[in-house]
Length: 180
Image (cartoon, rainbow, N blue to C red):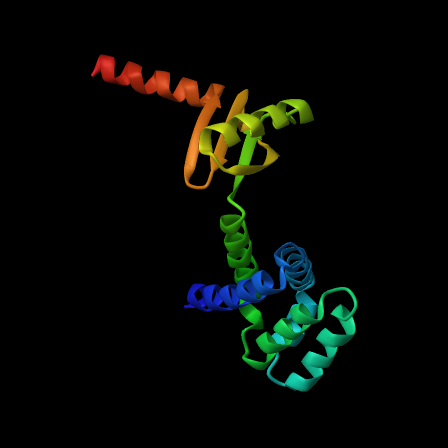
């Protein structure tokens, strides 16, 4: 249910952003606002409390975000307060980012490695993935010592496992098949 609601609101905001040619600024501003709610639990709980009147909540939104976010985004958050949908703000943000990425032919990727990847190598990996997928790749590096060596790349629902651990697991599986 929350996913459907989030998709609808994200879609509506996307349409406005597309009309106004403000998709990038909306994406950035919505991310900041969603992070403010996620990082400050006390702040978020004020907006979930039924005892606090909606007008006070909207005034708080106005005071905090006016001048830091566009009028459209401030009004959008006020609508979420009016419709008691502020609890799905994080999901709306995720759906909005998906819509913007789809519109701009962007795919998010994660390169998981045991140690940080040099910026040059990460850029080369990004270029290679862009060539292979035909999409503009946004890549970030995550560190996970259990990888042991090599790189595990996740793009959407796909995984490219070039890790030592992955190779060892495949070798173990092959050996079990030979023995059985």
